[in-house]
Length: 513
Image 1 (spheres, rainbow, N blue to C red):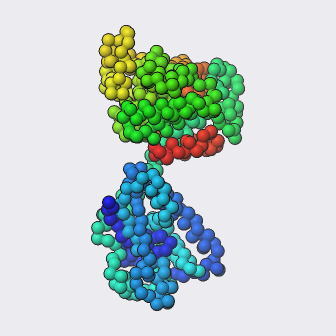
Image 2 (spheres, rainbow, N blue to C red):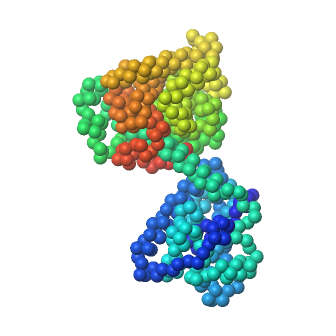
Image 3 (cartoon, rainbow, N blue to C red):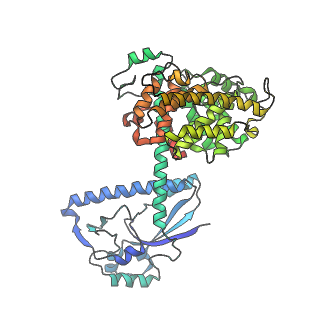
């Protein structure tokens, strides 16, 4: 089932004309391309801009599983024309834009079907045959010395209208607003994903070193990597990509399909030859049990609250369609390997930070938002996902179990708040939030590094790697936070291009933008 949105006229180089532009169109100035290579080059540049806009538009439309389908018919094939008339009108086509549902394969086919015109992109030039036609400020449907009366006569022969009467009001304004919103979100999603990977990789060689040792090894750029160095990531990014795949390919967000998908991609990570970056023992042991088919409630380490629970959770904050689903999925992806209540809550809070930054929460408002959120969730146990995970001594109720996690995380958040108010210039971030080996510590210390200098991503990353604890996990989270806040353009270009797993990272960005 398709819904007609708009029918309009388009020249063979895909310049869509609105009704108003059609009515205002004037005669075209004609230039000989052969004598003006610079003008032809200008056209090619403008055409590249059109392609870029078209790609973004289609991606934006695909964000809600709704895409724009373009059906194109040559006008001169509809009307008997003389050879002379055909040479004049050969570039005129009738285009119908329709809404249509497409699956992933159909989406790929659509992008290859034809080029998309956008009136806001190409306003300067169009090419026809051996000539370059310049239209000033409006796109044209005329060719060499073609007058409006002749064009109108041709339109009358076709019994078609320039624009279908079912055109939705302010169609183009809505498209442009949608594209702008999509671009803004995509920049933040890309910043979060690449910031996470960059921080992880930059912190990798600092892990297990004391702060004084790290500072003694720092290069002039403030990092342990030269500016042109390849950045190899750790299990933090590897497992985050596994979570992203599990979310994207799960049949739905219900417990059964999510558990199957997480098990699949965690086991794939376990057996990946590249899984040689000092992975956490809890993750390894739990994933080994998952591989054997052990139910997740038995496979998880119920006593562990290690940072493995939240170092990988960032994709949940990008994916979640609602706060309620975010809470459940963030906790469950942690619970499948780390069963301590503090691991669950720290993972949820980490995802909430990303979710809030994407939603426009500013750094100065972030801690108050987290405190308020924690208060509202303190007694909430997501039994539909966590099942009987709580049922063990010393806990008497599910609420008592999860409350412990919130209390331990809140204690760390208060330490961050206190340190920011004191504004200590030179301090090991691990003395504020903890060494980062546990989930609540890695969250708190990363959050401190971010909130201390949220407008300066380089300083955030430098402070995060120069820590005496789990430097890669701390920098991984801090890099994800600052990237989610400032967007991709704020991150150092050399590092975004040199970090490992480029294809997988950009694929994840595409999924969640």
